[in-house]
Length: 495
Ligand SMILES: [Zn+2]
Image (cartoon, rainbow, N blue to C red; front, side, top):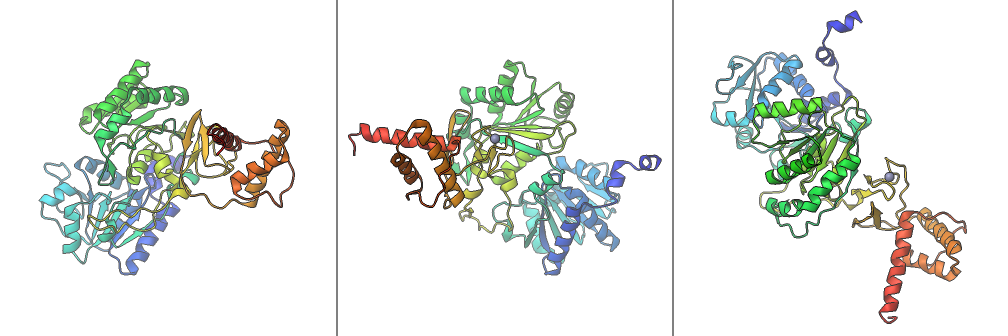
């Protein structure tokens, strides 16, 4: 006990790297040995990329080298300095006008890319580029000009278009799924209470046009549904709510307030003082929900255990960044609840199923290469509505039978299109057993049961055991759809 209290938690934490942080260093070294000098390290938020970066810096300093660490915004500089100091890097100077930590002699220089673009850039053997998926002209230029400098890019979402045309290699030491399994990130469950119809929303440069999104998502019914769903499922959890734009965020905030739920509003224009105030009230529980536009600087370290996503996107990066805001492990909450009103999880997948092994090499003006990913897209559990891509529901253990491509959730029809794989023997047997059960219950002829089977699999039942099994929801939905189709054919004059 006495020993432990001598060391603050930070000091203890930096004694040992976690396995995936060791892996990150090993992978970067291995890539460098292959001749790469522009290497991206993809680490999810919460993986401790600063800890890993601090070790890289330490090694460079030990060899008598200098280091530059860049961040994409001036607002991130102070927290970067604090994080590096917590890891034992102290010889730091900040490149920023009138900054109290200005020290050109320090061997580690921390700077925003905006400042770098305006200054003479000091010598360095290693340049670490934080959030390297955000392209910056000054970094591009440095990569060209300084052919003997080693660049390491850090990003939780290194999937930006064309990154592979500038950076040489991507290493991915750990995934969100692995961090959740290790208890480093929070478990989560996703519901899709609304699936907005975005067919009329224009797409420009690969993303939905904001005004079109605002028209759809700003409808009173959808705003009402966001608050209603939260009241039903939200359990008063500390919640971050993402909106399409300021007006939408303000409308959502007002709707929460109208139902007696204390809600705050934050956007990129909210100044430091107000932001701190809101954050403090959020921590004490005086504010339960923060409504925000899609700013990435919101709620970075807030104890969030519910994410409301009301901002549709086509960007996997944005999707993962938003959900990531809720995956920090907080004492007292066992998981994160995600209420996806935007259709993002259905369209892009669950964040545990999104990963890439390579950097994107799409040239400017070229259409982005999209991988076929229908197989990995989640569907709602017919029993409880949780979105998942597997067979057994992680929330209620309901087992999904891939009998039909249409399932109902919470009374709403949610259809997920995608290529179906060939049915297995077990699936055919299960369907046949359920059909037999219904045959007995409804007093059908054997012929009718066989026809139902043929409608499903395009072949007559053969080699199956005649045992019965109680039908599940998917089976009943399919059977009902056949009856409706049959009735329509009859009404249409028996064609
Ligand atoms: Zn379920």
